[in-house]
Length: 597
Ligand code: ATP
Ligand code: MG
Image: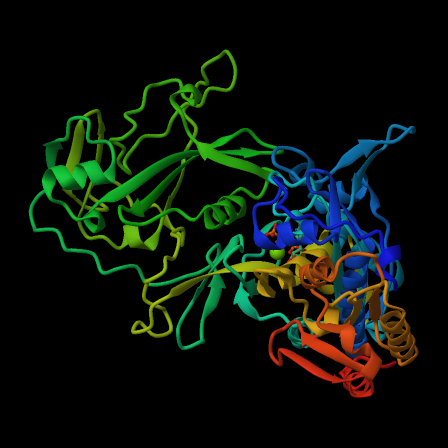
């Protein structure tokens, strides 16, 4: 391709809309333009990158016998109602774009395809003889993200590879999950990415085991916690660890302590010399559901611990099975209650509360959902609020004060925590960009949507399912985040839009032009993805653009063209610059992996 025909518009300055390097570079180098928040036009250079990533994905999917397909993006609400996800995906913080058609039927624009593919499976897969089956597609997904940002990292319209597998039993599901894990590792490696696999939360998708693939980068939105020995790595949303050993309380009966205006753990500890590990943090929250009235939630943590919102949402969802989708959990405020509550001085023995939900006070208080993290439940004696303003209790004990609430892991693991598998190991933090996520779904969707098959014994049962996603457009930008320098992008060769750019130093010089045209033609016919910068610009401008757009090899045809000598520049910096004969340069470039058909 000739650069003069490429519609290439590069920007000298960083665009105001971009915060992270990869986003700035993709805009500056003419890879994309923003149409609206989270909605981008993929310009021809970026489209080539996306096609190269997709080609690698297709090869690796074919290698594990996954079949490519293309599923509808317009999806009937009725299907999502049957799986129980319509409300959760459309109300509250739901991310599904949805609309009503001219027949007054509700539809959603696919944020993911479990429902559609399970419906197909229910129709087509009837016998164990047809199993296992794995389908995948590479397609635009729509998600009305609350905070679209960082360009392709969190778009509202983006490209995903999503795969779905169906099995007669769990062992077979596990085998495909393991095969996908291998395929994913090969895909990221072939794309030139350093990615790590981490244990992940299964989120709104549901199911049991799940693993994310993270491209490690400072700009990543996810926090990864990993042990130095490499045996444990998890997303912080899901990570577990041993909390610090608490400082024991001195023995003694429970007593009351005046704590005027000491509402926070820090204020309390600094005023009375307690250690935060001796205190109980009591949080009062309100959970809202799609199909049930809100519910008050009382959470106990040890004072030095932080609440993990994802773990809490999972715990609440599991304990309210008939409430429909969990829409949000917010701090419970005085306005939500009929009676005043001594916020800042709460103890776990707080009584159930009457929630305000209309004009009339309900006849009875609604039971609080009471949960305690093990770090709190394991304390023998502790300091907690007295449920009276300006007063705490010292030396309170479970059983004497109130029963221990239901114990469930709710704390956020932190860097520096001791690891469960080996307490001498301490968790280290790294930031990551989630580029892939694989799940063992089990039978959640096949049960809800009645996708059943006849097993070998002749009886009917729901299909076992897995699902597997790769953010293709996010991956492309993650590659830039990992591979760039002060001058611009440095694409890994396998996903670079073009492998070589020939720059004619002076387009006025017919000798240079002739040699460049010859090399261009020979590289093209040799199967190399090559650009020819034939623009009537100064050499410096063309060099800058070549660096910015990040083509792995630059072949400069300049003053020495008469001697058929050219300059070859390795954008990765590994081999630097060298002068060599035109034919030797051609041999080198045509010998690169993937250069010829
Ligand atoms: P996140 O936690 O980042 O919101 P997710 O867990 O909701 O992502 P999945 O449903 O697992 O995402 O989707 C599969 C893959 O699609 C993700 O691993 C990610 O690479 C990509 N992806 C998800 N949301 C977006 C988005 N808004 N923009 C670009 N890529 C995305
Ligand atoms: Mg995910």
